[in-house]
Length: 470
Image (cartoon, rainbow, N blue to C red; front, top):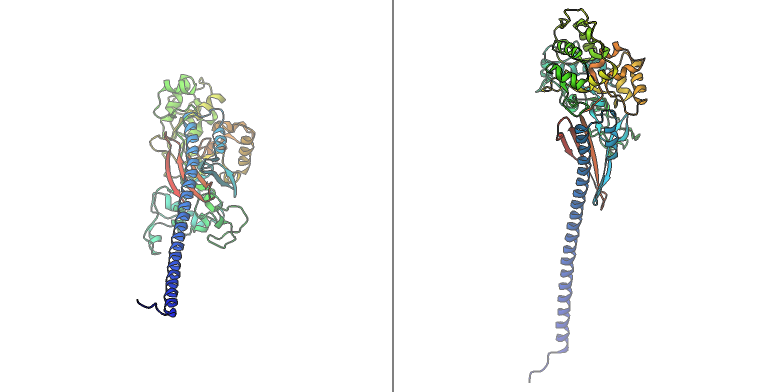
């Protein structure tokens, strides 16, 4: 029989086993802890991914709600209420889903307002004059000339402007577009137009005050931290707006140059004689819708081109001028057809709501909507006539349904027919393009996702001209 090992060897073997077990437990604990940390990290990433999806779809839901309102008012406009579309847009500016909520805002003179930005509340870059450009803060004479040179179709620089040669001499690989601006951001390609002028504090051009735009310069961009958004020139000008070709009836506007007299009498509620005179006048090269504001259709043929062209130059209309020949109507030269009655107020309103001289195949640059333009924008537009700008504000504020047609502005004794004849070509009472900035928030974590889309409601379905997610 083999004798048992000494006691000291038995104790040593037992101690070794305990050490091995402890090491095994420690290694297992490390492995479990690592697995737990990995699982926790994956769960966190999963929750963040889920929250981002929730926030994104909340923002998208707000965008879709807004587009639905725009399409509804394109198909079924409120002929007697120009403001109903904006009230309906405000009503869907806030909303929620089971997984999140959205808010849609835009800036007006620094303050956030519910709903999307009406691009027609600003002056179009492709029609604004040099005189009007110079009213923008930080604008200099050379930059205003360079902006006009950038968009015009020739290669002849203005007095202080810049064309291709000027850009090449500064080592730039591009020159002026010599065509319409496509976006406000494109202004930054113009020599002397710096981002701090174009964007101000609105670094991402979303029309909303973001945290980095209100931190007193702790992060880009530079800002004053006053809680108000200084959007620079982008708060006053746009390149996106264009004229709405849909009438107040929901039908495409009558293009007067091609419209039949029978269609004009039925659609515009005017007589055959009035329609015939308007038809003859509309086919001339000098015809402008604002010439109808007097209502005196029998006198249309006596309105000369030079006067109309001076009015167009005063508004800074883009492109070359048209023929200086006066129109010759069926009335025979400059003789007035005195037996044809003037258009009354209701007829005038109908004409401006349902007819146009804008070629439907070539949408004209957007005009300023007198129902939504800020006082500061109207004062830039009426730079030489601030009384008329204030009168328009007073008139529109007195009407719950807003200004229904351009002819309604004549109801103000402080807005003269001559003023409207001069500036009527850049005014409107409808809007086609809106910038929707929808911010979605996740219900589970509060994470936010923002979608900015530029939407054109001229057609059904509406078209998204630009789409960005942040």
